[in-house]
Length: 122
Image (cartoon, rainbow, N blue to C red; front, side, top):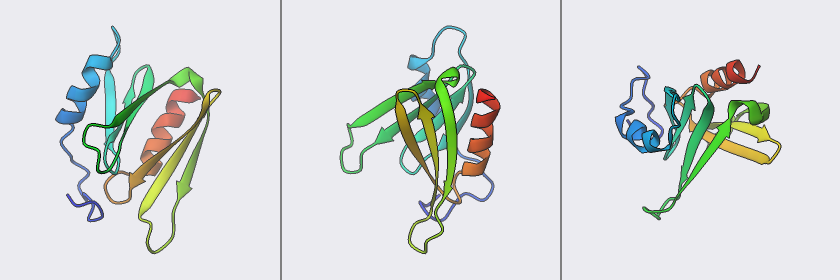
């Protein structure tokens, strides 16, 4: 699966992502879905959204974010239609701030993720 080549059958191995997330899960919390981002992942559990930001060129540097479903104020879906940008973004707004999550087109359907987030917050 290449960065821009896509994964047409939408099947990807999430076992490594699950292994990274499991130590952070609370009692009774379960992973529902995991979606690959450009260089990390976005996870939906039955209680919150979890995503990481990995920094290119810094193998050890990674930020881990968690947002309880109830803390999301609004969600935006941003399509990039330029020739050189091959992403779709989701903006997640909370009282504490805004988070921009970037999905590579052809690998993860950002519209599907947007719909899953909306199901949790409405």
